[in-house]
Image (cartoon, rainbow, N blue to C red):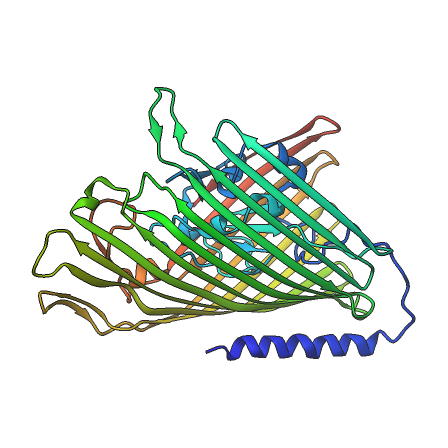
Length: 507
């Protein structure tokens, strides 16, 4: 099943060789400290992009990415414990949002109740910038139903001459009763550059205004290693590895706590710029994300009658490739992306003082998998003070699973053998931004985003998943969901005094 990833790697190597052949000219040393190696957004664009940079992140009172996003208008978060807030944008949540890492890498959490949503696997101190695009308008980054969240991590950059930088931080947050530590090392020259970093967070329980203790403690550790190479002029390769660990993460709003969460993220990025007369830029990414998630109810009052332990394995791998071309004022971006999600999990119930059947094993997912192949195109044109975008994408989504069966006392009480599904989804958007003056601009965007059902909606088997106390059963034949939206917004900038932004939308 990994053939698409191997093809993606081969395609990267072929393009790199082609670019090298076109650039047989003496190298010129250029200072590149401010160049972003992985950045596929080319302003100006016709839809608003909200971005929080590192300086803004440092002064905001948040210790995770979900909490950080609550500082953005029309963005909130679902809190289930002391960490790992799950973002909500204009009422859209869960798989209605396209959450990704560094412009393409996807992460599938293990918990059915999303105690380890995608944003929970990245440490806030590793974030360089956070981008939020509201609405179904940005179609370059995968299926987009309600918005895109792009977590951009700190990455090493080429240097004019070899140097090494070391940074360290030790802190205590009294409001959250927690310690955090960070150590980072980065360096290199104009050809090879690297970074190593690690974070440790240990937070205790929270005490409310009435003096009641709320079980919200957690421990999280992670380390990252990145190696960048510029083999020849205007070509950049980045290899990234991130290993994170969650231990004893309490979620008082959920029926279980996270006992152990081990996550491994790997990616290979290639970027080439100024390739030919009209070929401006080429970007490619190959990635794999592994999550091993263990949770239990051992610290719940009812654990003296039934002890439940759930062990879930989730894997997500894929690639993304795009090329950008310009012809005068016309810009075209073509590309393709692929995502493959695999998920399997069991729940073991141990019944205390139950002599006939003390242990029961149940499937949460049975080797379920979802694949999505996408093709996209973006056209951008500037007419003086007016910028127009038109985009479209087509997705072929297919899913499959092992048998969905429930057996009690040796009897089959439920079985579904029709577990395959495949859909072809078409999304499109168009928008324009008019700069009335240097300080004032208006934006109008219209879009239709379509998404196929996720793992919970298709294949979860008899588990409460946060809506109420009832067990839920996935429907493999559930149809795709569409969002038709129109946005109208305005922005007024005051030199040295910030900006005022406002807008309305209908969905």
